[in-house]
Image 1 (cartoon, rainbow, N blue to C red):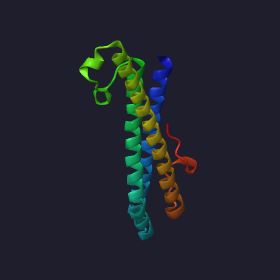
Image 2 (cartoon, helix red, strand yellow):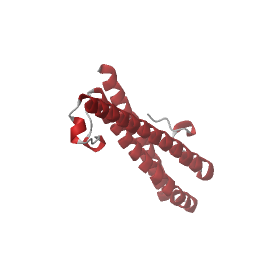
Image 3 (cartoon, helix red, strand yellow):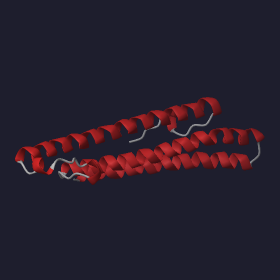
Image 4 (cartoon, rainbow, N blue to C red):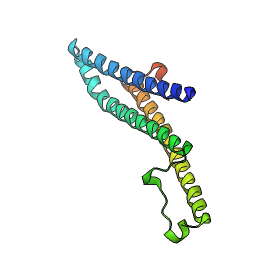
Length: 152
């Protein structure tokens, strides 16, 4: 239980840290605009769509991580969310075989849902890395240290 709590806290801290880094870059770009320089204003305007996309991907990734935690708890406690329940004919559900079949198929569904969420998280991390690389190479801005996003 302690280990699980620690993982949740570390996940939340990493998300908050990533958000602060993003806000820092946005703040720096805005301050550069006030300090003068037409070039900075153009760069900021060019970078803003990429920063917005990275921010939305980080928000999606956060939701997906929360969903994975929820589905894992459901699987551990042998519960099934309403949206993932399997419907069987009532005469089949009454038999022991029907109950086993339903339980097995629901476990497979929840396992697949968790797997799909991990795939989405991985694709989001790849997209964030690509956008950050584009910002670094084309515009000279780096949102994450070493040009690599180290998310959870």
